[in-house]
Length: 439
Image (cartoon, rainbow, N blue to C red):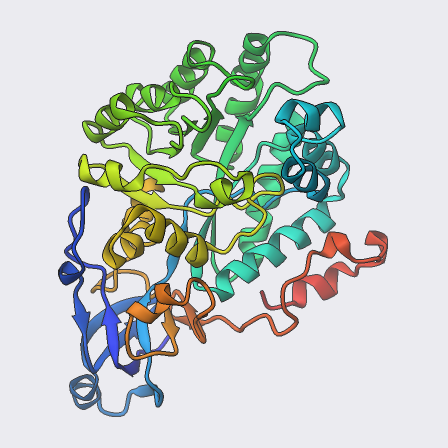
């Protein structure tokens, strides 16, 4: 790929030089005016004044921006469940009408309902649905998306999900980072105990994942009704011994998961709506990234993660969408981050860091989320001359241009749709036509 220059930007947010943990004031953001980016081989070669870059590189290709624009690193969503089948609209309606989680489950809803639909869905249709969601995310500026399994809940089905993520990543003009969440719940069709189920995953699933190189991340839902802190210890201990990174669904409804995350030096502890003073202090003394999931709070109508308290205690805060069919079906990362910022009194700098550089830390990614020399040329461009407008519009301002590895990502002109909702026969889909699509 040849060198090229893009700019000038009214403002360019580098997200560089920010503290890795704790509060961030807006004045700490590095905001460059009139800047351009010199890109070579998918990476940033130099950032400087646009006019200077053009003079220094005579004859080079120039992509000139002619409207007021703000450039910032591509967003990172470090916690999603966008690989699933079916819908949980019935759950949503029942929950808003006053039904409890137990009542919804008894009526055939909940996670197990999604597991059944996901298992039944054909592999091609499942990939199409996931890519459609990923494309919508990318068009809103999210260039790196973590994707969890957890709706397979058997060795065979979890491997199927991980292979789907891998296949989709080859076709998608963004990065999909896989995480194995086989420890989501104990499946209803498994006859043994919770410990028996985890032992089977340890002995059969984890070695297969490692053998095929399908993921290096292991997650678990540590919660009442899922897996207790005590039961999950041997599972995480084995995963850690095998070299997997650990992340934890922690403290969503009751405390306990954050202590597990700290004990295993997890990359992140996600949810934390039920975290109190003890849990916040524990996380602040660790290198675990505290990940808020405001989409789940909005979907369930419950308290937000205590983001302000976590930051003030010295934690590293990330914000992710938790896009899933049950508790967080919206998937709009910027909107959720902006709303959390309003309720938790977060600075613009804290919110933007939480969906870029600090989210990258949750995924242990050091090559992106900052616009600087040597980093991936992942960035999005918003139609404004003031970066504060991005969060001010609470998700309604979308980037007009998204770049991944120095390549322009063509927007999805059709708009968002779920292929599973279309009235078409999967057998009628031509694989050659699918592979020719530009996602």
